[in-house]
Structures are given as C-alpha cells and as structure tokens.
Length: 221
Ligand SMILES: C[S@@+](CC[C@H](N)C(=O)[O-])C[C@H]1O[C@@H](n2cnc3c(N)ncnc32)[C@H](O)[C@@H]1O
Image 1: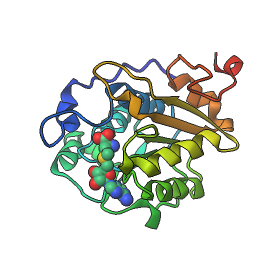
Image 2: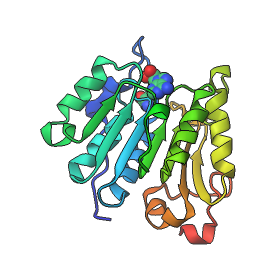
Image 3: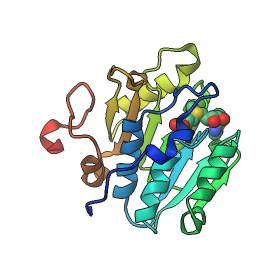
Image 4: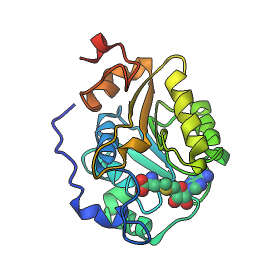
C-alpha cells in the first residue's frame, strides 16, 4: 500500500459533538482505523456504513476517497441530520458523486458484498438484523461499535460482538481498553474472512495480543 498521510481530524470537530456539545460518539483512534482500512481496500470497493448520525465515522471514508478515486460509499441513516448532508457536500464534487446516502435501514436493501461494512445504527436487537444483512450479502470486513458497552440499550451490539468473535472462518481485532479521556472501553471490533488477512492485517494497529484478537500471532507480524 502507498504511504498515505495520517488522517487530519481537526476540521471535522463539528461531526463529533453531541446535542449538548459533549463528545460522546466514536473515538478518533477508531475513526483512524476505518480510514486505514478504507485505504487498504481492493480496487473498486464499495464501503457501507449503517448509522452515520452527524458523520464522525463517515469522515474516515471520505478522507480515504480523496486518495482513492475508485472507492464508492453508501450510507444508511434513518434520521438524516444537516451536518451529515453538509459533510458530504463539503467533500467536493469528485467525492460526493460517489456517495449514496439512503434514508432507510439496510436490511430491506443491501445485497452487494461491500468490501467494508461498519455497523453503528440501532444498538438493540436491530443490530443483529444489520449483522445478518451484512453476512448474507457476503460483506468482507465487518466492523462495529459498542460491542462492550454496558448499557441496556446496547444488548444487540454486545451480542453482535460475541457473534463476530466466535464466527467460523473469520478473524477479528477488538479494542475495548479503558483510556483516560476516551470511551474506547465501549468496544470497537473489526472482523474479516481469514482469506482477506493479507490486506486487512497491515491496516490494523500493531498491538495484537491474545486478548484483543484471534489472529495466530505468528501470522500477525
Ligand atoms: C450511534 S449513532 C451513529 C454514530 C456515527 N457512526 C458516528 O460515529 O458518529 C446511530 C445512528 O444510527 C441511526 N439509526 C438507527 N437505526 C438505524 C437503522 N436501522 N438503520 C440505519 N441507521 C439507523 C440513528 O438515527 C443514529 O443517527
């Protein structure tokens, strides 16, 4: 993979603010993983995101699409917010022409095998319908947020995490470490078919341990 620059998150602060101005959504280090994964995708790949809110995670794909004119992005978001439309518009004509924003759930719609699918929509049982949709469509990398979140509303995303950790024929990497000033303890998982390890592993953080992955560590070097 060419030596792409690190992602500059500073211009996207508005996408990471909650209603009260407090940041509460995806941590920057996880957005950076989605950026690196997007840059590593095979030629002409489709990226799918389920649940975009104000666009914090969408910034990862849009930034990668600046370097990769072959990538296409589809966002499923049932409650489209102005900042998300603004973000897509601001990305410029050559990128926004490759973005497809759909105001509905993925389970009625997604059949294409996206190379990267990120699930962060409804964290109750619908999260399992989103996972089933991605698996039935034969999506390659399936990543998800809040797989360790200890809130009643997150029963679906927690079980989704369990299913991806135990899925046959797939590897995973998961970060749920507690860090000051971050909410990475909520859990962020990346799962992929074993056969895609050659391009997925180089895009992941280096610190693979038996606690955060099922990749045989001698292959991870
Ligand atoms: C946790 S937020 C997404 C956060 C976003 N990925 C980020 O990091 O900023 C969840 C979003 O999913 C949307 N949503 C809820 N159910 C959905 C569904 N079935 N399909 C798609 N989006 C859904 C909500 O409207 C909300 O904007």
